[in-house]
Image 1 (cartoon, rainbow, N blue to C red):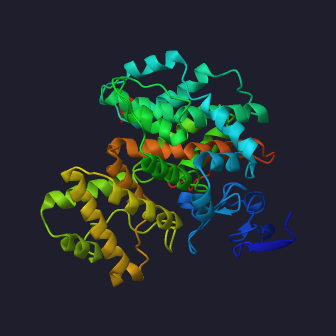
Image 2: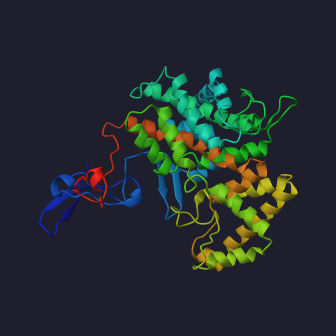
Length: 434
C-alpha cells in the first residue's frame, strides 16, 4: 500500500476524493483512480491508454526519455552482449538468471518440444498457397489448444510453465512451416543437434536433397534480434494478450490474439515498411536527397520509415546494439545486385540520419526496425515473414505477461469504459411509418 495520496476535487459540487499515490521502483508515480467513479460518479478519459497503467508488473522496465530498456532489472545492453535468447526466456519466466545446469535443462526441454503434432501438419494444406504467414500463424497457434489440452489449468503454475515451454519451442516450427507452405517447398522437421536460431534457419532454408549448415553469423544476428524483441512492456499486442487472458481464455487463444494485434502495420510492420520504402526510393530513380528534403518538409506527408520511435524520445537502445552486427553482416554477406542497391540506400540514409542537423536535433535516429529490416533483407527472408519472426521473438514476453497476470490475485477481467457521444432516448418508428 502507499503512504502518499492525491486529492481530486470536483469544483462543480465541492466533493473531494482522496486516492492512493503509488511509487514504483522506477518510472513515474501512479495515481490509483479506482474509487473516483464510486465517490464522484466520473470515469477517466485516456484514448490509447497513454497515461494509464493497466497493470502492475515486474517484468520489463522502459524509460523512453532516457533510452532505457531492462528485463527483470537487467539492462538490455548487458543481456545482448552476454546472453542468449533462451537464457533471456529463462530470465523472463523465472525472474532470475539460471545456473548452468538449469539453463542446460531449460534448453533441453525446449529442444524436445519443437515437433508439432503430426495432425497439425495437415492444417497447412487447408490454407491457400498465397495466404499471409501471419494468418497461418494466428490459426495454428489458436489450434494448439485442440492438441495440447492436457495441461490447461490456467491457475496451476506448473501447467502454465509447461504451456510456456510448448509455445517457445513450437513457434519457430509453426513460423518456418508457414514460409515453406507459401513457397511450395517440402516441410523440414526440426533437428535437436542445432541451437534455437540455427534450427529455425534450418527449417526455413534447407532442402532434403542436400546438406545445409546454418551460417553462424546469421544465427547470431537472429538471436540478437530475438533478445531485443522478447518483451517491450505493455504495448498493443501484450495488452491484447492480457485482456484476452483476463477472461480466463486458454493461453494459446490469448497468444493468438496477441499475434493478431501484432499483425497490424502500425505495430509489427515497421521493419517491413522500411524495406518497402527503400524499394520505392530505388525504383523512383530520384536522388536520395529528394526524399530527405521531403521528410523535412512539414507540409509533405512523406516520412522516412525506421527513424525515431513513439516511446523512445532519445536513441532506441536496441538500435545501438543491432547496428554493429548489421554492419558486420553486410560486410560478410554476398548480396544479389538488387539487394546490394537496397542495402547501399539504407546505409546512405543511416549516414544522413546520424549526421544531418535536422534529424539529430529531433532525435530521429535509426531505430531497431530500421536495422532488423535490413538484416532480414540481407538474410533473404521475404517481407511477409518479418512480422512472423517478430511474433516468434515476442512469444516469451506474451506468455510471461499472461502468467504474471494469472498469478496476480488482484487481477480482474478487463472492462474499459467509454465516453459515449451518440444519440439517446430515441423513439422507435414502425417501418411503415418511416
